[in-house]
Image (cartoon, each protein chain N blue to C red):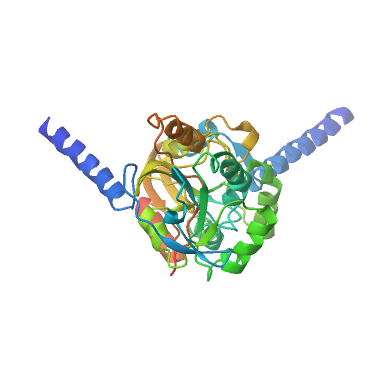
Length: 201
Length: 165
């Protein structure tokens, strides 16, 4: 029995360690950042005085999952920016290994797709590491309370990357809807579905 | 008598046809669901199944595919079976097959299409974040080893396979 308990403890300890060392988790406070936008100037979360929170997406240009989700990310911004939850997109990929993800190509892609939200470049990859993002797209829903920002949801946008028409569960929408209604978020984390972030070598 | 001979001839032709169909099926990717995947890799025999998750768009995956192809030859006298599981969209089966053909990759290959990734990723391995490349080793119906990330060299892969034989 004692052995079993120790085994359980070991497993729990390992799991906790894996989560704890990987950046923000649900409930973490988020510190603001200042990242270069494709529009030329830097963008911070503090710039959004009226926002009630944010839908942050770590994304990029080249990844098929990121591409598959572009229209859905634009739709999220169109639906929720006016309600106080704008989308902020951040590209953390190493442009040396993936030139398609460089700053110039971010500008081109945003124009092509008609991004309605800022597209920021996390050139140092510091924010991706701070957030604990590992994929593109990787979603974070933040709630603002005064100057405090709290993580309320981490993970995937929905349950079907291949086919938007076949989606059954819209995780990000459900989280933001709950926050807007003053209710607790039911599903607070899922596995982000995407390409691994391309870390600098 | 004559008709018996011709029947035999036809039978042979049909048999050959079936074999070539089967051979084609092995080198081109079919789409499997989760249950079919599990049936394929969790067989109760001594074969070591080395199952590599990849996609045509994933650079580190594409870089390490030749290591697996080489391993299939290196271990051809042992019970080792290399299986490629593509994470390409199921609508891209044609492109996946063209890619494999172009590179002369002959290992068994299929595309996994299993619905909500937030359910099937954990079913394949709870330690898996879902990123590729990822490689699993199965023998006798059980999973022996999980490796997320790529292999730096053929030697690295060869060593691991040796240790699991």
